[in-house]
Amino acid sequence: MRLRPAALIAIVSLAAGLILTGCIKYKTRPLSATVMEQHYRARSVDSAGVQKFVQSLGWRQWPPAILDLDALTAVAAYYSPDLDVARAQIAIADAEVRTANVRINPSLNADGGYYGEPGAHPLYGISPGFTIETAGKRGYRTLQAQKNADAARLSFAEAQWLLWSKVRLSLLDYVLSERRLGLLEREAGLRAQLAEMLEKRLQVGAVSQPNVDVYRVELLKAQAAAESAKGDVAQKRVALATAVGIPPEALEHRPIEYRNLDAPPAEISVSLRKVRKAGLIHRIDIRSMLVDYAAADAALKLEIARQYPDLQLAPGYGFQEGFVSYTFSSVVNALPVFNRNKGPIAAAEARRRQVEARFRALQSQAIGEMAKALELYSSAFDAWQIESNRLKQIEQDREQAARRALQTGQGDRFTLVLAEIETNTAALGQLNALMQVQTNLGALEDSVQQPLEAGVGVPEAPEVNPRHEVTQ
Image (cartoon, rainbow, N blue to C red; front, side, top):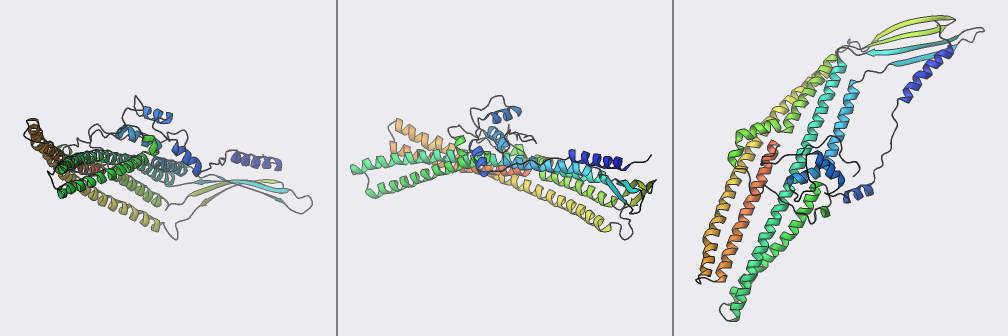
């Protein structure tokens, strides 16, 4: 069989057409800061997208009557740009897996010409080329890419944990600042009552002006502290909205609470053994390091396989001077004559040893972090219990005694208000201790990367962006 020039041109044209028709076209994706800001300002807790997303997580009713940690974390998971970045990294890693798994495309060489002699026949030929990878290089390359994709998914899981932790801390700060504001406002009100009573006593000459001035100064201090606390509450509310990924006005006129605020888990429920076991199982950096080791091991196997050359096969068909010629050639790429890839193999083996050493260091560090966080939490928990007992004692002994004395006519209103101020001061001390114990609980949860509070979980966001408007 002899191919004519027209047939040869048709074959080459067909191959070129198949290549061009399978190409992916470029798509524009404009990025506008103005449009992005408009989308951000339009975010809300009640949007249809949020409702559909939280229903996919198992919520039956939305929006809830009270925004707690679970609800706010679900909204944050819907809007979070950090999760979007992690999703993009997963998409990149999956694309790299597809890239690593593809076979090397064949080549096609076509040539033609003629002699300038009268009656000479045209010259033309066609020669495809096929590369055969040896020693399982494609499999090792794909395995390495798959491990990198596993690491990207662990990074996505870590982004979910960091998002939950950030929302928890912001919610905790906001709720505690609101409670502190209430106590400071109560103290300012009580000191105003004292000042008013002393003013009346001053008018009748029962007290001196310096004594009244002392209570006036205390009143001014209390009022200033309350005003400062108002600003702190507003600031913490903005910080909470930012952590959730919505504008601050989206949280206005919405009840917000931290359900487990006054019930931190007792130290007996988070023993060191349980915490260590949970940390070594759930800590994402530990799991990620194991995946990195598997990827480094696959990279070493790939470099070892590259000692063996690949094979190129090139069958050919040609027509010259009226005669058809058939050829078959093979080429061995990169013969291991001058080197056997020892340098890259040594480097890959050293990287694997480096990952192993990093894993051991990380594991030791993680155990130390968990032990330290548990000790800090235990001491803070004990201090909080002491402050709670102190508050109860003051309420039961002094304030209640002052109330009974007032009711029986043996005491006065001034003494009762002083007792109430002392109770309020003890409540502030208890609140500070509670803030410390909850902060240390968050550090302990971060060290094991799992919630330790009863009935609390981290919502699992999908790898696919849940928003219909991706730019939102």
